[in-house]
Image 1: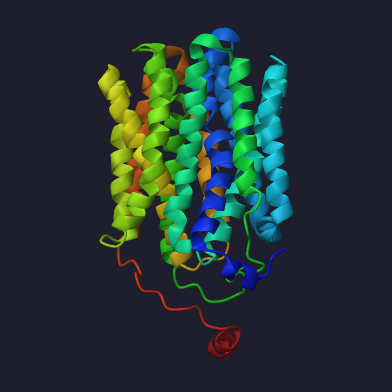
Image 2: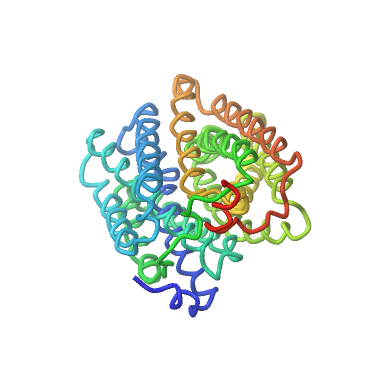
Amino acid sequence: MPSSTTIASVRPWRLAGEAATALAVGMGVGRFVFTPILPLMQAQARMSPRLGAGLATANYVGYLIGALAAIVMPALIRSRPVLRGSLLVLIGTLALMPISTSGGLWTALRLVAGIASAVIFVIAVSGLLTSPAKHLIGWAFGGIGAGIALSGAAVLLLRTTGSWRAAWWSAAALSVVLTIPAWQLRLPDHDSQEDPQLHPGGRWFAALVTSYSLEGVGYIIAGTFLVAAINQTVDGRAGAGAWVLVGLAAVPSTALWAGLSRTWSRPTLLFAALLVQAVGIALPAISSGVSSALISATLFGATFLGIGSIALAIGAHLQIPRAVAILTTGYSIGQILGPLAVAPLLHNGYHQALLIGSGVVALAAIAAGVLRHRFPHHLGPLPSRVQLKEIQA
């Protein structure tokens, strides 16, 4: 494993680029390609809406398992072999999806894919936040948007000439290409937040976890069913096209939100981004037509990654040990609850589900508003072990 000196000598933009491609594989393709493929599987493989929700839930359960593993075994966060193994496992799950029409096999593959996605995400983000490139976290998150746009475009091209099987295989091939630069991601050989020290930001961290967990519930409802909901009221190509637009809007959004943090506080930006996202999720449910679909996709794409990067940056600012893994765990619990909560409503379509998702995101914004109260914008360095002993004495 490279030493911290080696990490320090690597150009920050190169580190950010390697992390971005890892996130593109683990999240942009591995997690989110299911959304544009879902309508194809329903039409061609006769997959029921309930099974679709079940596959989404299996993926989120796997994501939770991976996030919990990062908390229980923090050495995972610093392991390049674990990162590389997770990338290979994820590619394998994508390639194996088309070999059968068994709901049981699909469920198992999406579960394993969720575990691999979470491990890739926590390793890449934690590594970047403890590296000289931590200020480029917004750009790295753009890799998720690029993965969404690229995989969504591939599925869009296959809608008329290919099958759902070809869509999964194209996603696997794209992941192989993106894994090549991700394979070289440098990781620090230590975590500065692992020592038992005083953490004055703990009281605000509770509000942050609440907000981010609620966001997990609301956002995943849209992330799973947005394309299918749009397809109910407009031409099928509009739904797939909207998902490409989500990815395109997401690519620059995290860098934009990071730039705004120079003028506005992160808690304020988190509050604003959640409100905008709530509006975007509700739009297809209250207004039909291509224009509403495109506006919804743009607002969703422009906020969901920005919310993640802002929340994780706040967690790092509050100096909480393994903040990325803890926040990801709360987020993944929310993702499990989201599809389960709306599953009974899906027989009437997806619009009611989107309204519920919008309402939950609005609650997340309220929690973010609480976070803004007397937020410690200027936390000093944590006390050393010697200072800690003196304080405790």
